[in-house]
Image 1 (cartoon, one colour):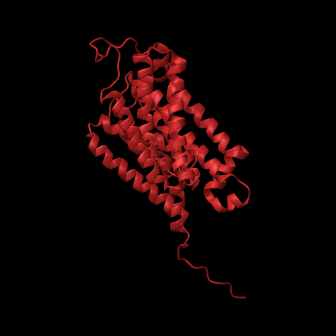
Image 2 (cartoon, one colour):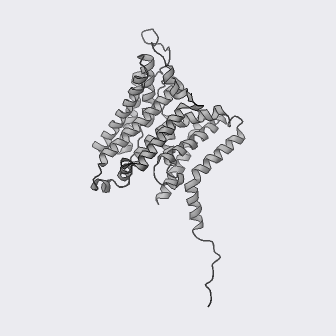
Image 3 (cartoon, one colour):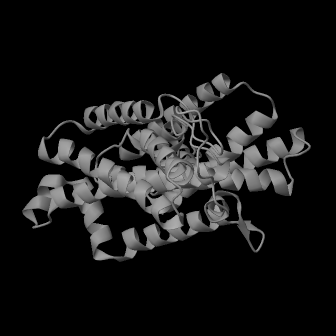
Length: 337
C-alpha cells in the first residue's frame, strides 16, 4: 500500500507560534535585554545605589498602574491618576509643613482625597454616563486647577516663606520620610509596600468572588447585569480604587523627594498607562492583570533609568515612552483579534 507523501513545506503554524511566544515572553526578554545592554554600556548600572533608585521609582509607577489596571478591568480608563498623584503630594506636604500634623492625618487626608476623586469620576461616568476618557480628562484639569490655586504655583517645603513674612511652622517628619527613603533589611520600604499591594491585589482579583466579578463586569457589561451582577457598583469601586492607589503613589513620591511639588505626578500618567498595557502580554494573559502590570513597571523603570544614565534628554525619553505604549497597544489589539 502506498504511503501518503509527507510534505517538506514548513507548517503554516510556525510563524503564528513564534508570534505567540513573543507575545507571552516578549516583555521578560525585553527586560533582560535592556538590563544586559545598559549593564555593558554603563559602568554604574550594576550598583546597589542604582538598583535602589530603580526599585524606588518602580514602586510609585506600580502603585499608580495598579489603579489604572482596575479601571481597565471594568472596561474603563482613568486619565486623572497623574493629577491625583500631584494632589496627594501637595496634601501630604501641606499637612506636615503648613499645619504641623502627625503621621496619621498626613496619610489619611491624601488617601481620602484620592477616594473623593474616584467617587467624582464614577459619578460622571456611571451616573451621568459621560465617556470615561472625557470625564477623567475633565477631572484631571479640575484637580490641576485646585492644586495650583491652593499653592499659587509654588512648591511646599521645609522652612518655606509665608505671605505674612514668616516661615512655615512644620517640617517633614522622619516617620513620613521613611516611607519613601527608609529601608527594612536592606530593601527600600516603598518596594516592600509595592510588593504587598501587588500580592494582595493579585490574590483578590484571582481567587475571590468580587475579583472575578470585576472581570465579568468588564468583559460583557450587559450580560453581567442580566446575571444579577451590580455592574455600576463594581465600576464605581474600580474608579475609587484607582484614585486610592494614585493617592498612595503621591504619598510615596512626597516622602521620597521631601517636598510637595506642583504637578509632580504628571509623568506618572503615561508611565502607568504603558505599564498596565504592557501587562496584557505578560505570559499571554490577554487582559489587564496585576502581575503583568508589575513587569511592565519594571521594564519602564529599567529603561528610563538606563536612558538617564546615558544622558538621553528627557524629551527624547518621552518619544521612547510613546513608542513603547504604541507597541503595547498593538500587541493587546493583535491578541484580541
